[in-house]
Image (cartoon, rainbow, N blue to C red; front, side, top):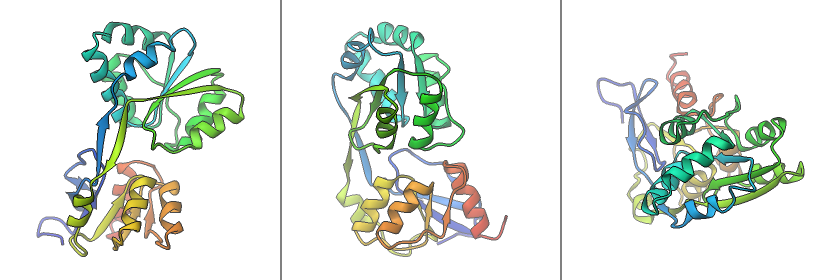
Length: 240
């Protein structure tokens, strides 16, 4: 529960370290997902370099693992040259910042951070041949819309997600005031393992997944990011 300095505590489950505070709440981090790199992704992407006009990243982990693989194979210069010759699309500011830092390119990003909106944004920019650098567990909305619009699409996988069963078992009911759910996959894992509490969903797709398990989140972030989650928590605590 909350200490004397913060009004509340929020439990976050994603694989990336969250900030220490979200709105008025102190953050507890219990990562229940473990990303693991997939070898050969840099070569697989470069084999498509003469075909693709666009590359899309839907998480900050994908470009990180791509670069690590390229460094192992001495392909960094070729990879960066390729990134500078194509349009690079991303789903949100965190992924955008990682791509900027790693590859020195300015990616294109829609205003709303959902796969559906990203796909429509890519279609609107006239892309014809797109490579997605992702996890095989990523949501399929992006793929569906691109294919429906006649866009050639190929995926290469830079990492996979493993569920940490021991980490889930370590989550205790009541250890935090709010449970922050940042992806549909995390929603499925928490719900199927009987985790209960006051759920905050990072966006409508995550909320729909929770609802499908009979769990109605008490707040859905209007901006699909941790900043949006912070607004939710402030509202729940009476600050907004």
